[in-house]
Length: 347
Image (cartoon, rainbow, N blue to C red; front, side):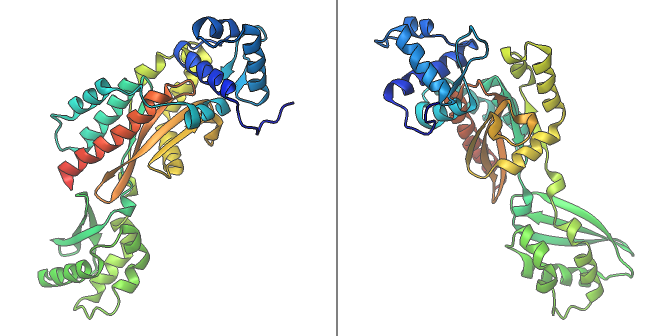
């Protein structure tokens, strides 16, 4: 067994690049004779076979059948993405197609996010996914208190990105309009500019010693804090490109087709996965790098987009045999475009 940690030679890197790109393009195991005929490598098929054997020993390739050529492993794809690929495959046509889709769009956030997932799916020929922003990190702007009846008050919370949330609160005694205005003013003075997370964690302390004329109203607001300052239930996942991903040859047999259908049908799995894994502006996870058996045969390329000070996630989900050199810059560019579109509409 060879040392799997040694540095790949120039010849090994060249052959691995050709094998990965050939398999991505043709979805067929790659053999030494094919490589010798297709690429001007200056070496014999026998030498190519020896190099392929070495790459297999090091874990970059595998042989699906005894008589077949080689295909990349997750490790092979990872080395290709990190060291061998370029982003030249994402061209001006794709850029203009994205921009054209967004040119005449309304300012409705749901419509913008839905379109984004569809465009990602269509251009990548995979599954396009867009997760709504995590408003828990949103910045509190103001609260308005409106009397609905003698015992009911409507609280209207606005965060900096423009999202509005309303909560109906039951109170024990009648509250005057002046007391509502006074309470709103105190809350806005002490909480404005804080994230919703900071508000929830420090609300008691920040609303103590107010000298307010109706402390019972303030205690009611503190009691409703979890409902008032939690926007997590607003999050949803937009999925586009179901037809596109099913056209991939990986899903021509029943077993693999049923797996991707299960993944699409159970959107909460994708939602949870994107929440748990998105740590950087751009993330590429390949095969078994993903946690959970459901994602072990897929690659997930995802990026951040922003709505004011809150961030959401968009990306592409597909089989590990994915056109990385085109899809990675596609996802990155879409994140930038979506951020600009949302900012122009809401910021």
